Length: 105
Image (tube, rainbow, N blue to C red):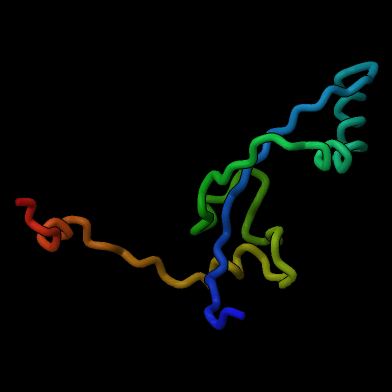
């Protein structure tokens, strides 16, 4: 058992799903998709990718805000509460980093 505690971070993750739906119109196809969404997602084996780490509210995807609850946790904290708990970002001085690099022969 590990005694180190990893810091939880928020990430925006995207998945694009395409399904073939038998329906009488576009509207009924959308409705049928919503009805079968769980089944469609359980059959899905396509690409899932992480868009970015969510470090502030500006990083949130459309339709999400600081009052929303993120997936992946049993703790009922809002995104805003998780952002408040995040440790401050370490700012690295990239202008002087070269002076610590080894000299090539």
